[in-house]
Length: 309
Image (cartoon, rainbow, N blue to C red; front, side, top):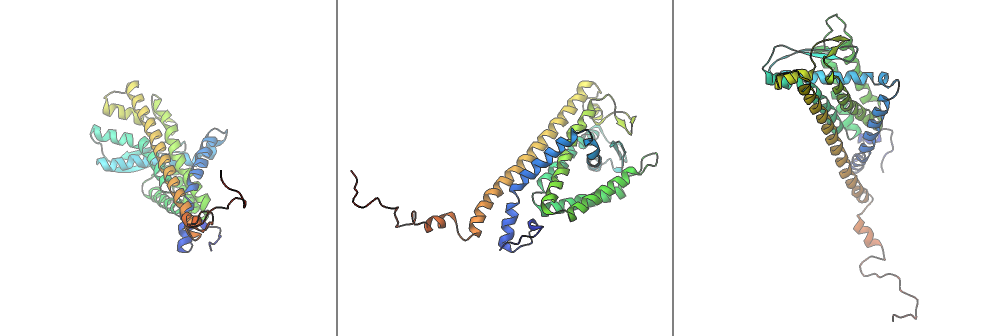
């Protein structure tokens, strides 16, 4: 008999019941993901939606700058630190300069990496248990970078440091405290925000200069990418890379949704078969037990005394 506890989807059951519950959680994945995406779009269009989504905007900034930092490590430039400002802008600092190809890779990493983080979170959180693990990993990464990598701004404002640490602690609390279905919803909402913010942030690339902490701070990532690849800051070059990154974000989100949806459909079919098996037989056994279709049996005969033509 399957237990009906509050956290039923956390796989704390006998082996055959655990299998059914693990499988049954997959069909809910698409529904939960759709709700997360719908909430994101609705909140962005409400008068105070931006205030409610402010922490997620900071999260997207952290993912963006962390992606730059990882690219700096890969290219050999060295990753020094990150600064995150109250207006949700940010900067990643390298330890040294690199050749144009390396600079192009670093410039592209921010807008190409953020949707990848979101897509990865979508794909690896189909169940409450996987959502808890993924959220705890995310929380540890945020707290660790908040302590070791995120630095105070040049004017000694430690907002970015404490914001990153606090967001990590909140994510950890959600992973531990929330019941299964809500845990998956929160994980998908975070993932959806990462993807959507990556799309929305690309708009700033069409501006003539980058604004950091309310001040003009030079070229944007698209300007740097254009200079590294085409050798010019002309509008056509900047818009080319802005459009390419926009298309990349859309493709990544589409693929993540398809992967999650296809997997949920496969597990839904598997769940249907598992339910029959756990109830003591298969569809074939059921047909055999039906007198109308069992071997050697016939359907009801017509009234006595009748005959065919």
